Image 1 (cartoon, rainbow, N blue to C red):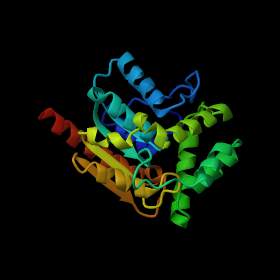
Image 2 (image 1 turned 30 degrees about the horizontal axis):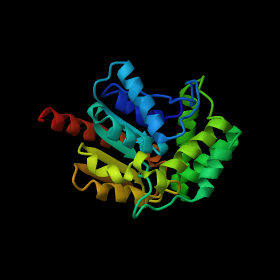
Image 3 (image 1 turned 90 degrees about the vertical axis):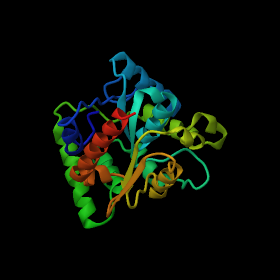
Image 4 (image 1 turned 180 degrees about the vertical axis):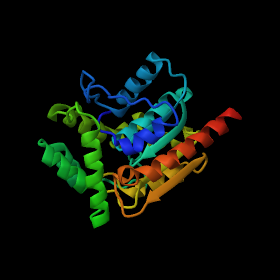
Length: 254
């Protein structure tokens, strides 16, 4: 939770209550990272229920977007709307596999400079404008909290990778999202950069197509990649607030 960009989160929190959660083994939460995204989703559902949240708008980024899909699928009564940022469904027809190099660079990072380089290389486009936006986002995140929690350690980073591999394993499709997208009937906002290296942009388009039966929106941002939500933080936070206002109005009529 300490590694979100305040330029994105603060405008949301200025309009509505925002709850950030460190899953098991991440940030300030003890324990170990779960072995499957369904396990991660259970943790979020348990926290929501423990603190008395009856219904929430759920937003997930990257692997968190995979988990957000599972929360909506496995606990639909808790989720009013879904926001999927720079993410992908599980393996299925049309899903584009992610290249390993950006993942491996992020996973192998140890020093602050290695994490910074992996962030800029993997999350932002090669253009001067996108790289400058990445540097600005890094500085905002790094300076937002004086006692910021550390990065995920090597063991839990490996467990995160295992969770992703299982999510993308066709043999474990029953516990994943691709074959269950037809179950989603809620408002969904899907967003990404135009050239996501980590979870290819084609997968965001595919999710939108698979949600043709639902009230889904797709927004792709120019000259940006996986970190579009930091590069275009002001514009994207505005879009999210508009989407959530509309979702609240829609559900109030049901």
